[in-house]
Length: 48
Length: 230
Image (tube, rainbow over all chains, first blue to last red; front, side, top):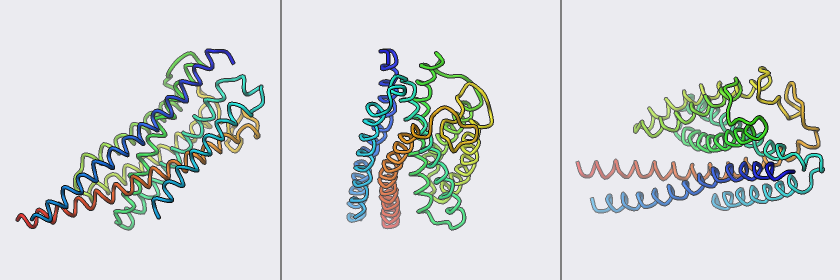
């Protein structure tokens, strides 16, 4: 395989996995945000 | 218990993908090893198939929601669609890179590529619609209808590589109509990649389902807080 082919294969795999990993990271951020919101709303209910 | 399944699915996916990458890059015969395009096809076909499976599962869950009115099916459809859109995005990017490598162009407006792009945009619309409608049952009903339309579109995209002879290559998997290209033994890494992506997708959907559950809990607590305030 020539170096040009290697670079295309590398770009392809890196692009695909960056997209999937970015989504996993966004899931984890969303998870943290939701838990903080849940705690805040629970405190709000307890106060009221 | 649910967390054990989640981590278990993610671990199985990681192991399968690692083993399969080793197989694709090291074990395949030299005839295949020397063709870089094959390595991209192994990932492109499996990730696009995984996204199609996701869209069809979303169609089924949306239909069940419309029949039963149970919001759990709507939450499941939302999670599956989101993961399938991520896979479709990666599949389109891989296809574009393959096109640049094999044809010298990033994109062409042929029937197969264009129909996939339209489907992808339709599902992006589905995800935006979910953000735009605050009322849960109205959101679920409209999104379920859109998901069913999207499912019809995905069927067209799936069959389009058999129906239209354009720039996009003919199907590579031997069970497809008009298939050509890969030998049966050389298809195996596509199926292993597909299995790994399905395990990974299941783990991500489980996380999304849990988030939907927390969102519903937050909505319920907000209603209680507002009723106390009133």
